Length: 197
Image (tube, rainbow, N blue to C red; front, side, top):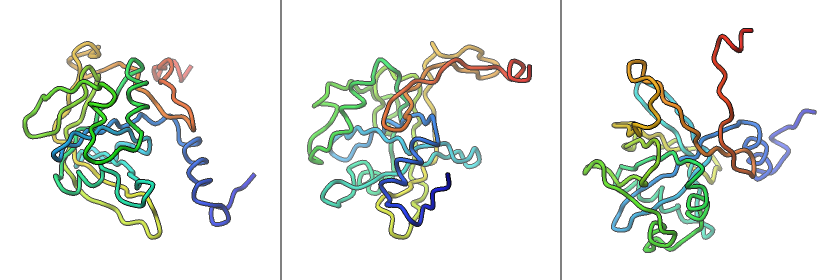
């Protein structure tokens, strides 16, 4: 079956790509601009190691205005990208609800925050991994309602409990992933020799 993307609606394109490019860890992004905003985004991926960058696609609110995360990144040029685990799934899911820009998801959904670096927004307490990022670039996609935002990683937080080999910088954790309309965690990892046979 071949599906011509020029012949289907954008909403169906989203459904197909979201279910095909999997699994994708969810970026649980914290921004701060008078009010701390916390929101999850599933269109998220590493982009490059030099410069060290991530890319996240951010949409708009139901009224057509930019989501608070996008507005805050544009204005402050900073964010903290957290990667949560299964114990945080419920709060992560709730934080996707559309709220007024003057209301913090952290307050509404009892999401604990911790300030690790004074130059960046707080990170969500007890996440295994967090990236402290600065705005790098926006990509304009003609007719798109989502904005791909490139973020440059300045620092990374790694919980000591997930480090399995300090010398080789190996870490092992189970981030929450997005698989179509559902959530999941990454399954059993397979080492390269095991794949080869």
